[in-house]
Amino acid sequence: MAADAGNEAARAGSTGTGERGQSAPNGPSRPVGSAGTHASLSSEHGQTRIADGVVAKIAGMAAREIPGVYSMGTGLARRMGQIRSLVPGGTDTSSASQGVGVEVGEREAAVDLDVVTWYGQSIVEVSDAVRANVIQRVEGMTGLHVVEVNISVDDIYVEGEESESKESRVQ
Image (cartoon, rainbow, N blue to C red; front, side):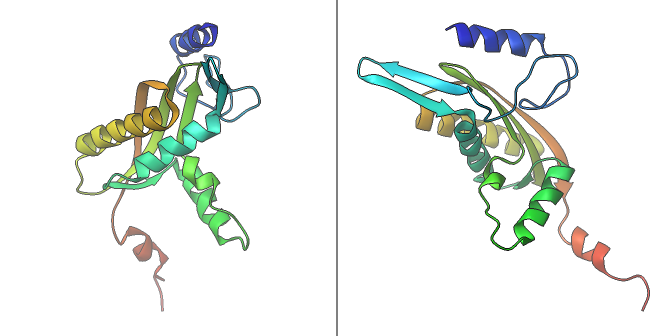
């Protein structure tokens, strides 16, 4: 319970625009998956600890399941992911939580998502579907109560936009 109260106080005291898991200028924050950040589910038979990174991966994969989500993350994070995918022997494990920030208490979790949608899709409908799916998946897989899912739509993908920019202007 004390960790939940601490997380609530941290959320209430944070007025910065930084994403959860990153340093916000006016409030406390901690990196996703750092040591000591686990959800604890206790029973009479023992304790289960769930790392923040696990919750972040579940939320990221749940968001990507929704039609209308083109990719996740801010512009720089997406570019780094593209470069990382080109490296031989590179793994795709970090891309599951790209664009996801989480705060996890003993019994509750809060999720922040950075999303890129397709042009022509209703941002409101896509956001509502993403929010509902993330809540369902995180609560169903971890037993944590999701108190909020904040979604930032950082860009809209226009089909053919990248291929046009690669064409040479001169011959």
